[in-house]
Image: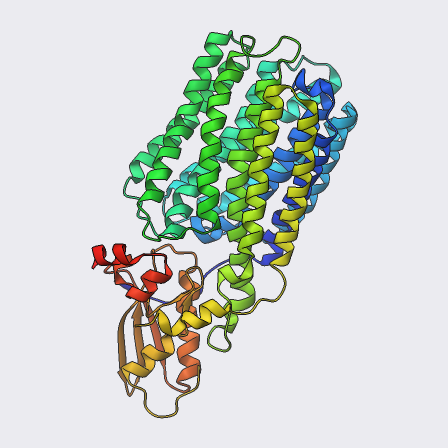
Length: 437
Length: 113
């Protein structure tokens, strides 16, 4: 079987890069919000300041970065074209402005602006889904990534619909936003949208970057489908504020899929042919460790009162959020962003020069040391924030906020550094003859 | 990447392809064992090569790079680079030095060979 060489397809750098650069800015902003936390942060996760920090992290950092990753992965890995590149550029601007305004409105608890900016966020998410879903529809073959992202888009629509409804409900006093309703919204977004996307993409990227063969594709489909079903069931039941025993059962149910995926991924990494691991591999290992910790703490958070003082019931929930958002998804996404942007830069800047001049390889474009630094700082922040929350130590929580701000700035600097002109590394040139026998 | 004026042979083409790197792994395609066949005739140069996976995001760019390198090295000669998937690429196809570059130690190399 043979085919004529066809030029690789990749979206323009100017389409994807703004999403990846805006993400760390929101990370730093979330750090500022955590660094200025008040004692009330330990009393409830539904206080304005905590809601603002959470949305800066989830909508601002994780979602914006994931959008950039998917605008890249849609054509390159899943195999379909976006609906409109111009729409993607416009959506980036809308998203950044709407999310920024929404976070500020949450912090000030300005319900009118919350409703207006929330509508802008919902519109941005809708435009993103329409645009990126075209890549899913146009793809020629099914893959674990395509399946997972299809599911995750359904969850993103559900999350945005609930979120907008809540924003309007708060402004118009339609109905109270109970902890159960808030939990349903949060888990649809964090697990249904972000985690499922991450899980599906990892099934495709981890074997690719580490030269491993995934021989258990069917198992992957089962894990992803079961995870999706568990999240839907979780959200449907938790919204009605069930008792602790039911919450615990739901926590076990919803954790089973990611736990099985983690084991699957660890086995995949163990079978890799590439002995050395790069930043993406390191990030995968770190993120899996945090997933384990997040699952353990989630069970405590589900139990509630027996573990948490009545005056500070948010402790375990905050720790769970820190481990899940920063530790698991954050480190994984940060590691992947150190692969996605260099790939784009290499593709658009250096690919045309192959055969005409020495060109750098992808690893020459980013600083491995800086990438490991960002990964380490993010992991340390997640751990400090979790310990601070569990111990009810406000000072330590604020310190985690300062660390988070520094991590966001360092991450942004690391990304911007990639744009500087790069030369082929000496090691790569020096080994040219050595590796050719 | 020096242009050759004399009629090339298979060795010349293989040498030229050593300037084509998998940009992700940082190893040239010859050492990676991705070049399955080279055919040099008066009518032109045909190369059959593969990529680490069929859906490798860099696959198209690597093949395009091979085309560009050969066109620059052998100007005027028609070049055809075909993407083949049979047999699928496996890490065992790498040269020993390429495997060392991938992080394999001597014990693992011995076990593989």
